[in-house]
Length: 123
Image 1 (tube, rainbow, N blue to C red):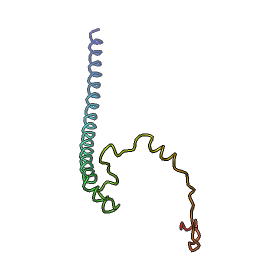
Image 2: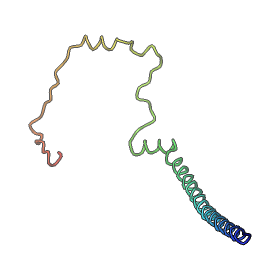
Image 3: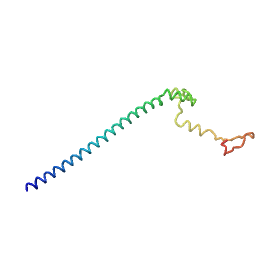
């Protein structure tokens, strides 16, 4: 009876050792993966900081203004400027003005010297 109990205890101890070894291997693999993911996160953060710096350069107001003036011909002047609220039209005043004016027909005058429109050439 004692030999059977000793054999049973040795078997349980052997399975416990195998279970602990399996858990320690899983932990080692998980630590390797965690280190890899942590390294990838650090790399991505450095890439993000580089992109943020580039975006700050590209979207800086002075650069946008230079591009608008150079390439698009825009200037820094306001197209319409109101000096007070008294200059704004009253509500309904524009509708009354539109109702009092007669509608006119739009006419297009084409000169005879103009070449005919060719849809294939886009001209």
